[in-house]
Image (cartoon, rainbow, N blue to C red; front, side):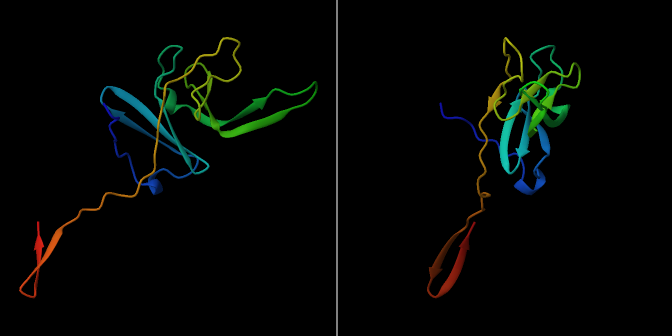
Length: 131
């Protein structure tokens, strides 16, 4: 069975750095615009079921050498609003945990809008719109 497509919003409605939370059937899903690319993850933290997509979106400190501080992944790190667990919205992978957990991710595509089409015919030099 082919996947079902669910139109979410015009691209302009989810500018870079923002998100839109939608309900698709029984699933709550967050759609994120990270620097012009769109990603979608389940709006449920695997730890205790918090509404994950309502958390803070930022970056995080990356592993580095002694006395080095490297900040990265800007706009990709989603922090759970209940217990601050961090997940990469582009992969669903938990950040910096020995036994990694992940959040379900979903495929996102940007498509041109569906245009309503009408059949047109010419009958004896009269243009006829067929609806």
